[in-house]
View 1 (cartoon, rainbow, N blue to C red):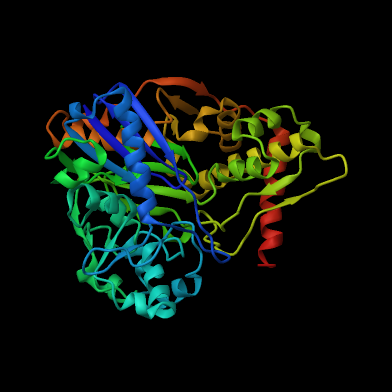
View 2: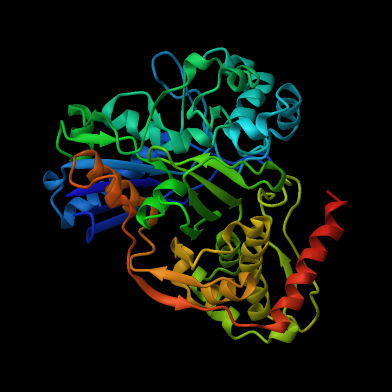
Length: 478
């Protein structure tokens, strides 16, 4: 049995699988802290506590002593800063944090070709500008840094004791030379980072350590079993779908959203904020539009209305389309395709008769519209793809997937076990690392459970154009 551990933003997810069938799964919730506007942080210790809790839940139904290898996945870009004793120096600064906006401009000025070198232009969600902010605003912390890890790799450290990351997670730092698939000393030094702080690089299926006796005592996992490097959640989500071969693509609907297309060469497109990153498997790269707001606006509205996310979607289905306002979903700014950390969310077109159902419909439609913008930013790159697979918690909603198909004009296929996503990809990499699967086996595609073919909806097209116009009108007010 193989274990996949995914350190998400809202929860840690653990699955136990034989590589095809999921035999047990569990999640443990996480919370975000935002002590100042634009800040988004988490305590790495909370990830470890949640990981142990999720493992205990899995172990209650499926003995953990049957696990033979562990793979890791996690939210990308987070800055976990450690001192020389490997103690955490401050809360981790996350992917949706926007405090380092000014530092991005300074980084691009210092390294004008960074978009081509690192696969995308600097944005505050990435790790490198965060280090510039720490150097400027928290010099006492910066002066004590000895190591930098990404979220999943901190859990890796707690499990196996090594300072290591995979190339797909490294890709999201801006410190990786994407074409060469190695750290760039120039990018590190331009962002107040000593290259010696950066972890060892591995491919996602490589064994990077074994479960230590201390980790075994805390988790219930067998001491000595191998742990593979794993990958950033975008790349492990791709592995779960077989999107490691050129010409395969998918959408991911988690807290954030991604439109991902795998390739066998490095093709940067920084002008459109389409990310061109190293994949977690050897000799593979991918292009990705990354939307900070994914399905998060649905969860946000659910919280405001004190209902569930499922209730938001159910209400949206009952709305009167002619009375639906426009909603900009940019709760934390936006990355693809705008590269705009300043824009914020808002409703336009509210009237006295606007009901909760219409508010819900506006928010759900806005998620579909972000994917329409992402599709347009790819140009002809995805024109030949037969379909886009769908994974992530948001993929549970047929209504949302049909809206995305209609808004993008692309055929969407919801896979069997679509909500397992990155955790399944991490487990498959663990299987590959032990020889139970080959690298070519990772290209196997799961069965499509449901198809969503695009339907022409003139009213939806009209609202999409209004949505885009509202963004342009408000952009000048940032």
